[in-house]
Image 1 (cartoon, protein in one colour):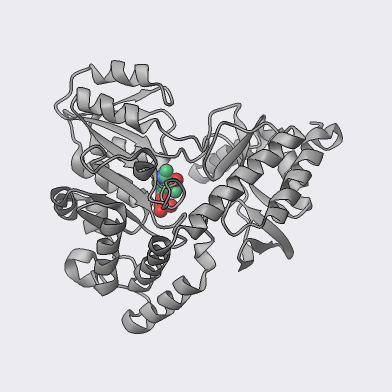
Image 2: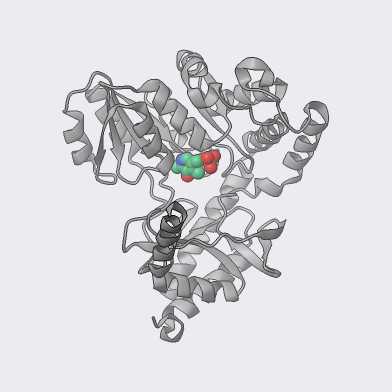
Length: 391
Ligand SMILES: *Cc1c(COP(=O)(O)O)cnc(C)c1O
C-alpha cells in the first residue's frame, strides 16, 4: 500500500515531464565525458576552472591517501581532524582574508550546521526567495521565524528588516545557482548595518569565479569581514574537489566548531580529499590565470549568443541559463542538443519555479573557444527550428 503510493507519485512526475533521469558517466577526460557509450562536451558541470581533473589535485589526493588512508576514521572532534584538514582551514582563511575558517564535509551540511547553530526560536531569518535548497532547509532546522523577500528586491528586504526579532539574519546566495545573477551585496550590507542584522552569504558559485583573483563576491564588491561576517562557499564547484567551508571572525569559527551539529556528528572528509582541495586552492591562490580564462569564456559565449539571436538571462557568472518555459519542450530540446554531442543542464521545477524550465549552461576555463562556438551553433540551429521543438 505504502509502496504503491510512492509509485503513484513517481508516475505522476513522469506524466508531468518532471521525472529526473540519472545518467551514468562512464569516463571523464577534462570537459569531455562519456555517457551511454557516447562522448559529449560537458557544459553542465560546476567544475568552473577545470580543476577536478587537474594533475596537481590528483597527485595531492594520491599522496594524501598513501599517508592517511582513504577515510578519516572519525569526526573532527574525536580523531578525524588530520594535518591536511588543518592546513586547508588555514589556507582558506588566508585566501579569503578572514581570521579563520572551518571546513565541512559538504556545502549542504555546512548550511544546515551554520543556520542551526547561529539561529534559533525567537530569531528572525530573512531570505532571498531563490536561495539554494540547503539554505532553505537550514532555516527550517534552526527553528527561527523566517520570511522571504522577492528575488534581489531591496525594498522588500528593507520592509522585512523593519519587523522585530531578537537576532536578525539576512541569508542569500552570492551568485544564484539556477539564474547566475549576483546579489547586490553592497546594498544588502548597508541594510544589514542599518537594521542590525547579521549577514550570511553562500558563495558556492562565486568563489573561484568572480573577483579579480577569484575570491568571490566579497572581492567582487570589495567587502570586509566586518561587512560580510559569515562567508560560506563550497570546495566541490570551482575548486574541483569536495566539501565546503565557513570563514569569518575567529570567535564565529570556534563557536561553529562546538555547536554546528553537521560538523560535530559526521565523519571528517578524507584527508586525501582535503589534500586535493588544498592543492587546488594553492593553485588558485598562486595565479588568476584560470579565473581570467573563465571570464573570457563567459564573455565569448555571451557575444556568440547575441550574434545568433539566442536570448540569455541576465548573468555575468559562469551560469548562463536560457529560459524555455515548458518542461516537455525543454526535454525535447535537450535531447536534440545531446544528440549533437553536448551535455547541458535541463532544470525543471521544483528546482526552479513552475513555467520557468530552462537550460542551465555552465562555462569552464577548460573549454576552448571552438567548443563554445560549436555549442552556440548547435543551440541556434535547434532552438530556431520548429521541427524539433513541436510538442
Ligand atoms: C551546490 C550548492 C550547495 C551545496 O554544496 P555541496 O557541497 O554540493 O553540498 C550549497 N549552496 C549552493 C548555492 C550551491 O549551489
